[in-house]
Length: 67
Image (tube, rainbow, N blue to C red; front, side, top):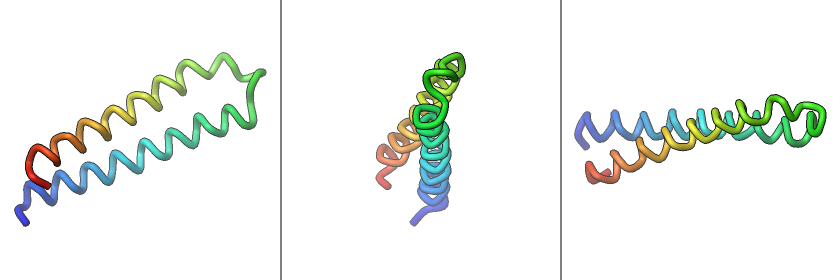
């Protein structure tokens, strides 16, 4: 396995972890803070979207490289 593929796999794993962590932040807001914490919803939702998008982009790069 090439170093490029290993690097891409590492990036996918890192981004997946970050997306999962951000999803938990969103989950916690929903479970514990709504409706009072509604003012945080858009920022947390955007951060969750961005983290998931970063994971998807890294995953697509890995697939394109044959990993």
